[in-house]
Every structure is written in structure tokens, then in C-alpha cells.
Image (cartoon, rainbow, N blue to C red; front, side, top):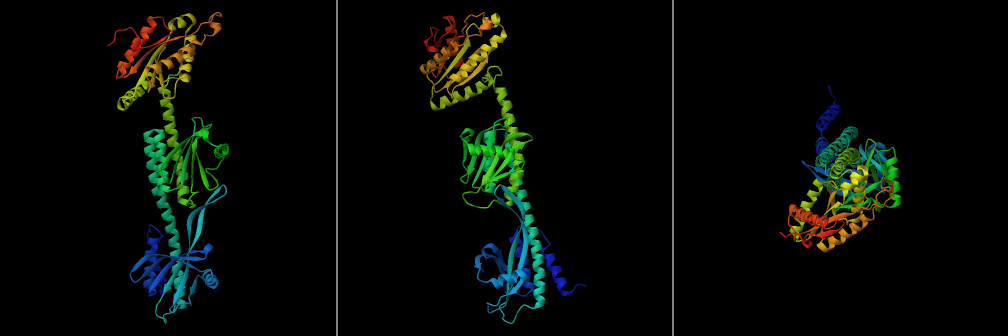
Length: 498
């Protein structure tokens, strides 16, 4: 048979032997039980901030209800109180006109700290104090009650520890689920830029860091190509990797070469993103502005999530790489016809909507068949490469060339009228005329390349892709019929107008 103390402990244990979502929910169960067991008028729970000598009131229970409270009480000038409570775990106040007893509650909570370059995760000790009050002066706390209160405080301590661990696990699971969903959306989209913004905004939303940044490497992982960042405003910013300061570049190299799964510098945590040996980039986060401590759950969740981020980025980069290879001609490094047609359709739509002009150049290499037949296909390929190199290096950033087929190439010139297109054609003409076939294949003769070019203009010569291509091709035909090595606008040719 149980004695009275054992039976009370058993009943109390049974009441607390359940899963609580958080510390507050546990206290809402434990404090009213104490209220009933010891016929108390009021019971309070404080967090004890020992480093600041403060008791922070969190909850008060009386009769049949509990309420959240917020009050800090300094115990700096009461060393006897602290010493007795820490030593005995129980003390009775002599300052009130009615009996009040304090009992110590100790438990552990998952946490982390950043010291220099080291991030430590551990179970930190937390201390709380329960104050029990009886308003009748003669209702003092007996020695038997003190013994039972201490035993019940240990039971509360044990349950607080389990609740803190369960809460961390549940929060971690919730965050992981949310971030997994985020990574799944990113991975399924296979669109790197949009996906990365989604990832950063999601991390910012769930963790509320002051700043989250993502450093992306180039495909072979030898340098940083871009940096995406998001701050507390939620706005995503993009920087070019070349803008990095030298010291930051050195830090990034150090992070990549480190055998650790993270690096910390000046309260900024750097998590390298790797897939096997592929260096994908770095995820960094900090609270430098708010000075808010980075929590254990945040760090552990992001550290684990970094693997999924790395995989998603690696997949997206691989997809982009494959797509890029399929969009560009291997020999000339120019976009292929299919890719050009997509861009051309977009630009026509944009030009119509905003009433913009646009020009189109079709060109081919003069007497290319004779070059192939006379000097061999190897020299023909060399000529194509050289002409393509000149095209790539002579155009503006907004211009879009492509290899249309054989030695025929097309160049789209957005927001460019006919006269401006002629200036570009003249530049191409002069630079390509300076190309000389290798003398070892021409018996020492100077054999120069030349091109013929036909130009059409939107909307004067056509308002759709087929119309503009047709008019530019007719202008090219006119140039070839009148001597080659030149260029002409469609409207300036002697061909019949349509």
C-alpha cells in the first residue's frame, strides 16, 4: 500500500504524464494541482535569471484559473534568499504578513552558443521558482509539506525538461516540413533564379533572421558568381560575385576548405552547400542588427536543410547547364534557331505593346561553299568560329544573334531603327573583312573573309516573325546579286515592294 506522500506523488505524476506543447501548457496543469494539494490561495511561477539577479514573473494561478504575468523582481540585495534557495531548494519568506514559500525548479533546455568561430549545441540549465501563498497567518508550511513540495518540484523539473525537448523536436519538425515543402517546390520548378528567391524568402519568413544571404559558385565551383540576399524587409537583392571584397573572398575559400559543416565569424554563420565534391555555394545568416541570439532550433534546422538546398540548387544548375548546352550551337557558341525563335517572338510582342522599333539582320559568309571545297571543312569550321566570335564581341548586350543554319546567321536588334542597324552592319562588315584564312592552307596568299547582310525593320517591313525574316532575306538576296560583301535595308533595295 502507498503511504500518503507516495500516493500524492503518484497522482501528481499521473496528472503530468502527458504530452504538452510548451512550458506554459505544462504549468497550467501543474500549478493548479499544487493549489489544490496544499490549499493555497495563490501560486506563482518565475524564471530566475541568475546572471541578472532577477525573478521574472511568468504565471499566476488562483482559484480555478491561471493568467500570464510579466514582472521582473530584483533579488540583488537579498543574498540570504538566493543562498538558502540554491542550497536547500526551499525557503519560507519572512517579509510578508502571511506564509509564502519558495521552491526551486531546475531543468535543461536544448540551446546553442557562438564563441568566436565555434558554434556549440548543448543542454543548458534553466532555473525557475514557484512561490506558494496562504493568506491565513496561522497556515504555515510544515516540515512534512516542505518535503513533499520538494519532491513535487523535482517531478515538475523532470516534466519541464521533457517538454522543452519535445517542443524543440516539434518545432524542428514543423520547420523542417515547411522547408521541405519549399525545397520541393524549388526542385520541381527547376528555374534557378526564381527558386532561389523563394528559398531565401522562405528562410527569412520561418526564422526571421536580420539577414540571409546565398553565395552561388560558378558551375565548376572555382569562384563566386553571384550573391542573393534578403533582409527583414523581405526584399531580395542580387550582387555580382566580382563585387566581393578580397577579405570576404578569402573567408569563402576558408569556409569551403574547412572540414566542418559550418563556420562562424563575428556572429555570422556560414554553412557551405556541397553535393558530394561539387561546391554549390554558401548559406549565411545573422542577427547583427537586432542582436537577437540565434536559437538552437534555428541553427540545427538550417544546418540540416542546407543539404536539401544544396541538392535543389545542384539539380537546378545542372538543368540550366543542360538547357544552356541545348540552346547554343557547339561550334559557333551562338544560340540555335529554336532558342532564337522564342526570344524573337517575345521581342515582337514587347515591341507591339510598347510601340517600339526593332531591326533584324540576316547574314551569311560570302563564297562559303568555295572555302569548304577549296580548303576543306576544317577551314570552313574555323571561318564559322571566327565570324561568330566577331559577332559575339561586336554586339550590344541587348542584341541577340543565332546560327540560323549552315553559314547563315540572324541578329535581332531590339529598339533599333534602320539607320542604327546599318551602323552595326558596317562594324561587322569591317571587322570580318580583317579576318584572314591561315596562310598555311592558302599557299601564302591573303584570303580575307567577307559577309553579305540584309536588314528589315519592325514595323515598317513587317509586324510578325515570318514577315521580318522574309524581308531581311530578300534584302540579303539583293546584296548577293549586286556584288556581295555589303549590306542593305529592305526598303532601300530595288526589289518590288509588297
